[in-house]
Length: 113
Image (cartoon, rainbow, N blue to C red; front, side):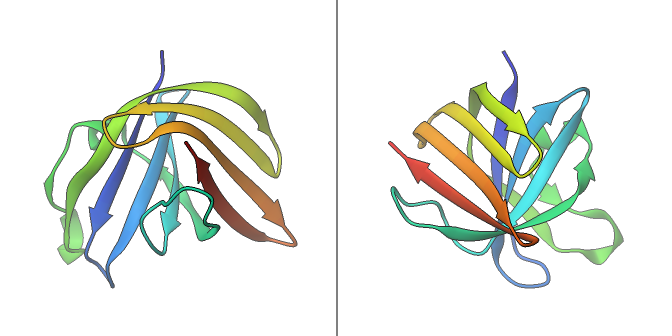
């Protein structure tokens, strides 16, 4: 079963990186705040990250701050289409459904327990 991680990242400002394992890499979005049930959060897509971040905590290369694991676990794909991703999360903190949707180039993350 594929894995996910949410990392607290302190550079360039505090945010959370939501990462989903897919085909040997991590699809990544920057979340402006911690997930809360039913609350829409702006999600900025970032470049794919290395699989090592599933288990990594510490400094990020290039003076880009440091990361700390906020949550991690496994997930199941429910939908993976352009502009819409729907997954079932089984983490230590987040257990439920997460949806990422794109509207006019803007992404939003919503979690429901």
